[in-house]
Length: 257
Image 1 (cartoon, one colour):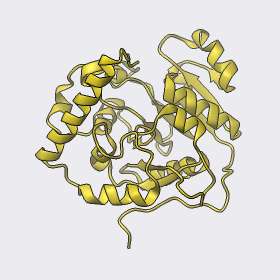
Image 2 (image 1 turned 180 degrees about the vertical axis):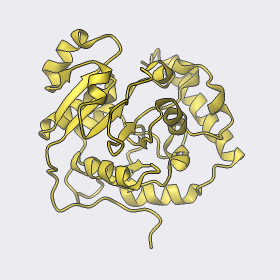
Image 3 (image 1 turned 45 degrees about the vertical axis):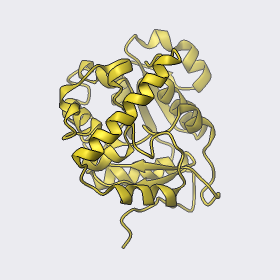
Image 4 (image 1 turned 60 degrees about the horizontal axis):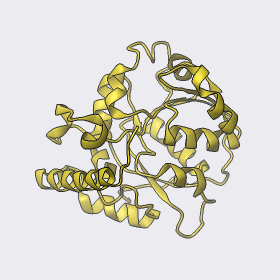
């Protein structure tokens, strides 16, 4: 039995869903464009209020709402905000939201350029998404964090297309993972089961799969080569890779939000 599974479907048109997106940055906006184009009803929220999202609504077809309204919109919720802002979300954000609604987390840790040092993430004991899960009080599914927003919006392809980009999907809840993997496939990407949330360090910044648009076979091989338990040496290596990448971005004048 293979270690990793790829979502495969005979049809790419799922039943139209209600999807809430909390975060209107690059990834949130790209998802809104693609999901509305596929016929899904999308509510999108930011921290500044729906009245600031008029232009984005015009571009994407999504409906501007508050974070609480987005969380209660329906079938899947996407949380795509800077990691440092996760603790500022309303504590009752998911109150009344059914337990079977998957919550997607797209976050990445950028300690130099944006987030500052988060002590719980410095040791390597926790992954970013485990930290997010603790703060949200809900199980999360890790995906869409390792692909550029422009590629997410523009590079989806039909299943079976040679070189189709694969995205790792990590979670502890099997049913939530399968629902999200089906959505990834519908968006035009091979969804590779990347194991548990504790294994999602393999798709975080500084790792080989981060921002590299691997096809499924290469991604599966890469995940397998890393093992499942992060060693201190791996943590140090990938943290150093990320620090170098952040310094490069800083030198170019890039600012993250």
